[in-house]
Image 1 (spheres, rainbow, N blue to C red):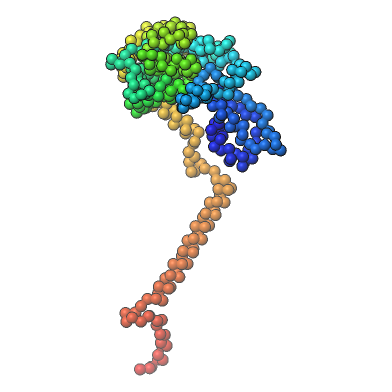
Image 2 (image 1 turned 180 degrees about the vertical axis):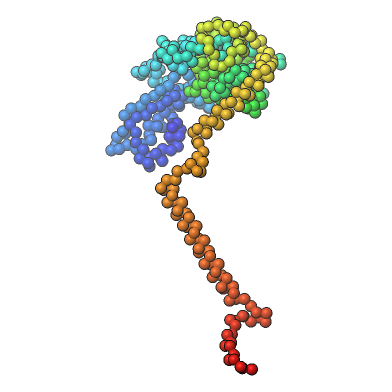
Length: 429
């Protein structure tokens, strides 16, 4: 449970006699210092002693700190410093994890410079999913330069509510392109650095994708800050700003943004603005090794069979110039592949229904075997129904007799039983 939830339920847990010896606190670097102590107080001491023996904190102080809404507290009291970060800063003995197993090694290079001696776990170098290329893409990651769209870059409809329509349309078009190739929707997330842009991307997705069962919505459309601690195979990242760096200048936010992807990372932004930022130089230097224009291989369906180090031999790569070019290409690409997509969709539905039939077979009545318990229950129900019918018949007879006795004669008096007159003797007049 979260620290806040633990505080809300403390009295209930104490009444239940909840006892524990160990606490494991995950994402400890993103928890306020005062909130960190709440889980330590969820049990009453016994004989004056607290039975807690071990407290394990797991976190990354190189990523985003706790969120403090009050600017005065954040600026003057250093309240955004977590206890985890404080202990690391004070050189309290700690264990430094020096191998990652989330992302392919090429993507991990984008943030390895921030961690001393960070290497890769063996499975990153051996599993096919990390060694095969991303279908339809010439590179596993790219920083894609997005020029002004309809004469506009970043906009600010209201204070601190930043949006970039060109990047939003580009991101949704790129997501649609991946879905046409066969990428699963649940494997793709779209992230951005501002709430306004996240809302705009959701609106574009709902208009272009949600009502189309062949495309659908991506797994998540969120901000980088809210997505900390999560991951997905493929990330499309919109940086929004075109006039200045904005709050991505905070290297901790950059590390979070670049480390969410496992297999593919495609960053949309004004390349020159971010390339010129000194704080981002180590990551931007790696991005600079690939072209600023998105390079596509639209003839390569998902999943790709070629290795990451191999060049595609099936056709010539395609270079995307800008947002308008991307949206027009994706529309034409969709129209040329819609029949195949529909057939694949119907086949997937049929496979799903077949799986459901196997998992939940319908047993014909003649093939059903009645258990002893079911038989006893059936006989009991039948006896009960028979008894109810017999009782109803007796009641009907009784009511008929009562109705007969209460019938009235035409003169207003009650009818009585007819008087029995003895037969007259023979010869009587």
